[in-house]
Image (cartoon, rainbow, N blue to C red; front, side):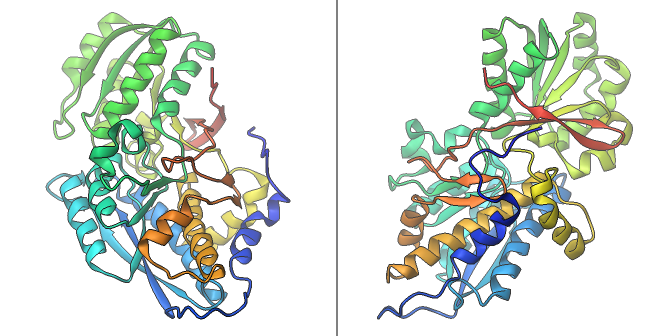
Length: 405
């Protein structure tokens, strides 16, 4: 099991992180509003709606708990502004809708930060718009590394400074660490790779492939799936003839669920591996037989299964009548980061501007249940833990932290 290194008294961390920024401070001349708005941008329409609700509810739980204690610093209430970046036409997240939502957030001067997006394709569409407005985005689940890579700064942060922060690590680690697991734990000597052509799916599949090759795994092929197609039997029949030791899929549920259902017949005994796009509430519910034995990573520690998180999980279940997944907690922590950031702005007597929120977020050093959250200069989480799960008996069962080398 993942050990909680670098943590304070673990059962008290979440409460301490929240309460620390609510401590009264000396009055300053600066005048502060009684409310500020926080955007939430997730795909509530389409294939990933159930996971979007899981993430949304984690964020809203933090908002409600902060407001129940009087708000940030005991004086500023948070008002969530929720937008859907999924569309019927796309059948899942839609980057064009994400861009439209971001423009609306930017136009609303009360919005000082946005939790989201869920998907990296949306993140690529949102980032340049947010950068131009100095609007901080903090994602609990978007993992494509290009968005925060300084090599792509002119594309995704044209204003120069980091605006895209994460409470998870990136596919620069998630894909390769799963390749390590395939080589070291599954003794795989060959793999066939598929992706769904999305920014996330292509990115994680490519990073898996590069590391698989370096670990001595033979890549028998790498094909792309059209998420809107219904029949993948042609490519699966080709793969079955090649008899790979493992199949790796980079992508999200729209293609992933159809792939799983058809692979159940054509590749019944081949271990199937994926990233966090298949760590999904909807996957098991929609394809209970096909989901069995699939492996999936998440780009964070497995926090919710730990005793230290039992009280948090109980609060979530009591509030929403369902069990959380790990990205509900990373969304909760994203709101805690916003809370802590603005509390430090108030403590210093500075105005709550988007630029100040962005700049103060950069210096976050916040103990949470998932560990100490702090960011590098690009907005990436310094902690690089990746966790592996396998679906067994209709549940994601924690396998362990992924090998890092």
